[in-house]
Image 1 (cartoon, rainbow, N blue to C red):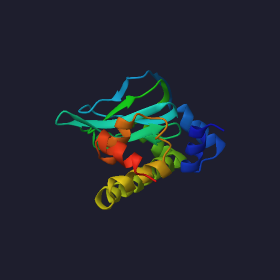
Image 2: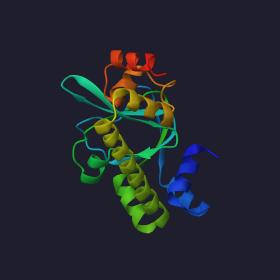
Image 3: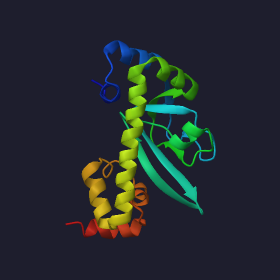
Image 4: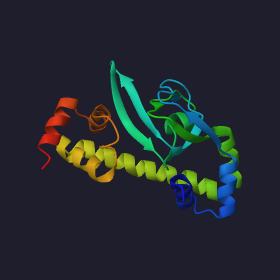
Length: 187
């Protein structure tokens, strides 16, 4: 079974018919490397379901990039603040490689959520899990040093072999040279 379909089933608790209804409301889009799904400062009016590929969520501040997350196959997300409140996005979402992504507009999503318990549950659980991840990241930044944050990324995610170190260092809040020192001392 495909990872995305498995994730939709896990989060929604839906029957085969309900899962089909969800897919019937999604639009499959091919994003090439470097394409933006959302640009910082624009309104995000879509939810994204990653079939394959990788998407990077990041923002610019004072001429510096900060990686917030790397969305991978099977993940479901949006730029939540912009999506819910229809205000300018705080982050950009960019395709790091050729990616297949299902999308649903906010308007269509809101209508589907009103009639589908499974889809409504999927959205709720997606937000709950995103909040739990965000809470872990905040606690990590407030209570762990760079070495501990690196170990957590190493243990919990498959990012280290797949993504450039500049994204990993940005995610854990250190410079690339500091990350090199952390990696050299990790054992």
